Length: 85
Length: 357
Image (cartoon, rainbow over all chains, first blue to last red; front, side):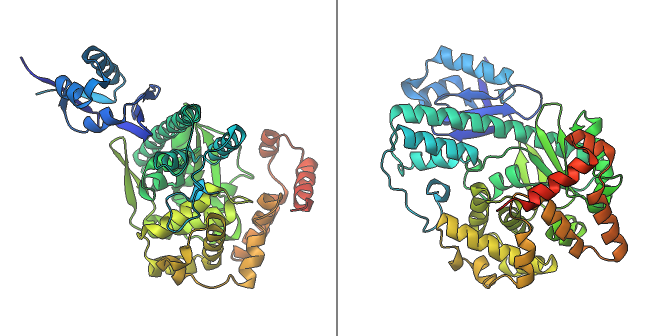
């Protein structure tokens, strides 16, 4: 099984504010995506991270299924990339 | 004003207390008007200001709105810069995204409301063409045919996304705008900021500082608090070379403007700028000529008076006559777009100039 990781897309524009983050892809016309309490997740995604790693680092604040769903949305929005390594 | 100076050296301290409903509402409204929601959020995060849970919720809401607008404008900046690069037009992104990413500890501290880009004057009409070919629409025609290319300051476009792009031929209206040597400015090595992985060219720190001073001292009356903060931020950052900046301001006859910008910034924000190397280099008072010219940038009619004062900076009688004639007799398309008749335009100008300051 190839481990799957995620990291910030090179073309992502973002702002961190309080504990939140707002991100949008520099390409296209997608609307910005606000992640409540997402500042820590965004910090972690500076490097490729696997789901287990992210869930562990975020502690009890994120259930794995919820996190996977959020990551999928961010991939669709073009602000993070899935990295198969 | 306390929030506006948060994070500056020896700025006025915040009282740290909790505001009542009306006080908080007024503070958030003022911060939003000045696009300084990010600095307010930083002050709260640092514990310089106590807030209730509902006040914090409101702060989250306004900072998210600010972030959303700034990010969409950054996307528009990347697009516009790409269009100019593709057309081979030398450019520098000005103000908002440029300063947010170079002068501030966090870009969230510096909000913006449009995209400002300076282009090489000789390529002005090529730049217009590139933007229009992308679907951007110019809001108002030029004052007279060829006015922009000879005397114009900027033109406002609405991009297909709905965001405004101000294309600049120089930095400010009036005499100080004419004295800026934009050919030299664009021949200086740019700095670069990375927006979504794309490098866009911005003014080097010395030129950016002089521009920030022009923006603070000449662009609005009263000056925008955010513009004063830009001056303070760059003055304390230490990336500005005092000698080179003074020399640049001298060549542009703008030493008095920088002096005024530093003085009004220190007075408004209460930050001890006079101890910074850049303020020491510019120590002194503005000359009588500068005080008179800068006065034309103030008051309700400043758009007209500063443009009229521009005549002193134009070389030769022919250019002065062409400029004054264009100001007095705008073309029909310009008047129509602004909803004026020829006589109505002059009456409006006279009324504005005559209004008390």
